[in-house]
Each structure stands twice: as structure tokens, then as C-alpha cells.
Amino acid sequence: MTQGDFHRDRPVVSQGGWPGGNLARQVPQGQGGSANLADILERVLDKGIVIAGDIKINLVDVELLTIKLRLRIASVDRAKEMGIDWWESDPSLSSKAADRRLVEENEQLRRQLRQRSDMPGALESADPALVEENRRLREQLAEQESGREEDS
Amino acid sequence: MTSADGRLTAVYAYAVCRPFETDALSDVKGVGGGQLRTLAVSGSSDGNATDHEDLWAVVETVPAADFGEESLHRRFEALPELEQLARAHHTVVQTLGAVTATAPLRLATLYYDDDGVRTVLRREAEQLRAALDHIAGRAEWGIKAYASPPPRATGRPVPAPPSELGPGSGREYLRRRKAERTSAQDARDVLDRAVTELDAALSAVAVDVHHLPPRLAAAPDRSDTPGLSAPTHEDVNLLNAAYLVADDDAAEFASVVDLRAHALPLRIEVTGPWAPYSFTPRDLGSGRSGPGDERTESADPGAPPKSRS
Image 1 (cartoon, rainbow over the protein chains, first blue to last red):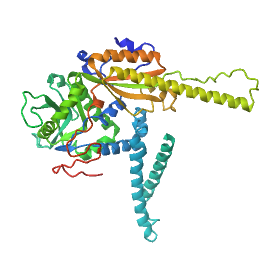
Image 2: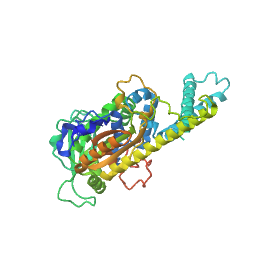
Image 3: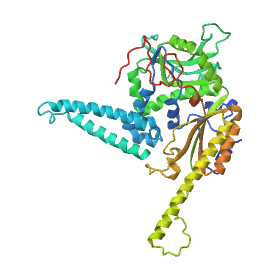
Image 4: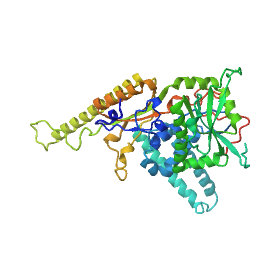
């Protein structure tokens, strides 16, 4: 086949490819290095062997989920621009881990607030940052829940 | 470990592979900007020596300060830094994948020193060899399929057959709505069948297939569209899959894609060849964690305590 076969009259896009155009492995399209970041992250974050041992750092699934969730909250707009949106359809992330983490954080914040409000006049003096964070977490939680209902 | 200038170092491991001509790596920079090295292991897992060192790891000595748990977490949270790290890791893995059977390790796999890597290679030698056997002479191809433009109805109403009822009547409206709903359902069925056919045709050529979660938006062709428009019909990712294809069958695989792209109402994106990220085992049984128990933390007595942020 030739490269032209891929591009005749349908928009079939090819990316990636072995670097250096190594023809020994039958490269059907252009050189590497330009692969889409979303495609790369889909592989380097989620795939690859995890070996335990005399190991310094082992980014196991739990931590990767946390990273993804933080990316989601911190830079979702930028990530979306780049086409990184795997969390939208990652069931473990969108409907389980994210919810659970937010629920836990919210619970913790509620407990802290409750403890403070047990003290006389404490609610007025509650840390405004804490109150604000609690409000934000509630909103995110509500968003998550409505998103999950739409999914099902 | 400590480098010549007294700084603490760690060893970043990229992949396990079969022996290759190391010239291939001479122009490649690693995640820490340093020189890439290979570590070789001989012998079987039961400690008996074999004839040759057939299991290699590609590693890089990196500053421990830049690759400690805390600094890595910080770097992973910033997209530009994550991108830089991921691309550097990927470049090394892809370079290896082009020249030899390569089993990528998870991003940011770090050891204290070379001996730590060798110990793991020896301990897991049997499974690592099996993993390399599975992918030798094969590469991963990514396929994403979307509904082909133009969508079923580009603003055109479904043509209404003649009716004795007046155009403004309620019954006429309901009849038209029903026809539209039926038409939409038919279109979905057509797409479902097309995806099934595409997947089956590709799987027939491939050695192995791995279905990934579908994407919501089609990113690559949006550069000319400022701002993010609402997802349209064509943005729905119907199939996102990785296929492990023998190098000898790569041309046939491509022609199957090409043929189906013409015959089916799908827009098909091909990426690859990739190093076989999706076709290496995620976890090698170290004997400590049971199968399916992915959340088991490493229980090494010598492991440093994890700092939780």
C-alpha cells in the first residue's frame, strides 16, 4: 500500500509512527513525534507494566486516579482544548472515585465545621476559606451526581 | 545512589526489551535530559545461568530531587510538565519499539539504583520473557471511529409523504415526530452495525484487541474552529480500540481500514504504529498481591513510608 491509500476521499487521519522512519518495520505513514497528547497520555498513564520491588516510587492506580481528578478540576478547560477528555467516559473515575473522594472531603469538612459550631458563636468565626471550599465541593458533588444520572 | 558531584540520584526505568543495537538510542534524550543506558540480565528465575543476557532494561540516572514522590506529584498536576514528561518517556519507548520487542513500563517507574532494576528483572524474568514473546514482531495500532459527516440530517426536515391531514394539525405533527424518531433509531442501528463490522474485520487481521474507553470529542480537526462548540453528531466516538498487529500484516491491516472507511458510514482515525502499550500485562505477579487485587500497596519492608498529601 502507499500513503495515498489512507487519504483518498475519507478523512482518515494517521499519527504517530516509529521515530526516524524505520522502514524495516513497515511504516505506512509519516514520521513520529507529532502524536496527539491525549493518545500518548491514554497509553503512558494507563498502560505499561507496574512492577513492585526495590522501588522508589510506584504510581499505582489509586494515585493515577488522584492525578487525573486533580487535572480535571484544575485545568479541565485547557485539557479539553487539547482533546484530553478520557475522564468523561472513565467509569471508575467519573462515577466512583471522583464521587467518593469528594464525598470524603466533604464529610471531613462538615465534621470540622460541626466541631467549630459546637463552640458558642463559632459558626460566625468559621474559617471563610473552609466554608467556601465546602460550598465548592457541594457544587462539584451535585455536578457529579447529575452527570451520573445522565449517563445511566 | 550518589552521583560524582555528590547529589542523590535515582534510576528511571522505561521499558524491558530484547537486546538491540544501542546506536538507536544515541540521539535520544531521556526524561532527565541524561544519557540512556541498558542493563542486561542473564539467567533464569531459578538462578541457573543461561547462555546469554536476553533480557534488557533501558534506564536513565536522574536527580532524586526532581523525581521524588512529592516533586513528581507536583509535576503531574501541571499539564505542561506532565506533557513534557509523558512525551520524553514516550519518545524513548517508541524509539525502542521501532528496533526491538519492547514492553513499556508505567510512566515514572523509579528505582534506587541499577541493582534494584536487575533484581526485579531476575525475579520476574519468566513473565517478562512471556510478555516479550507475545509482542515480538508486532505493533499496536490505534483505531477511532466516528459517525461519518455529513450526518443523517443536515438541517433538512424528514420529507413528509402526502397526507390527507392538514399540515398544521396535531395528528400530522405527531406522525412526523414519530417518523423522525424512527429515522434516528435506524441511523443508530446502522452505525452500530458498521462499528461491529469494522471491529470484526480488524480483529480478524490482528493478533489481539483491546477496547479503550470512548472519547467524547474529536480533537485533531478542531484547530480551525475557535472555541469549543457543542458536540455534534460527528463527535461521538463510536469505537476506540487498540489492535496488536504482526509487522508482516501491517499492510493488510491498513487496507482493511481503507476498504471499510470507504464502505461504511464512519470516519476512521488511525494512529500508529505504537510500542505495544496496551498489550503488555499491567501487573506482574510478585507473589504478594492476589490476582484482581489491584489496590494492594507494595508491602516491601525496606520501602520508605509514603507521604500522603
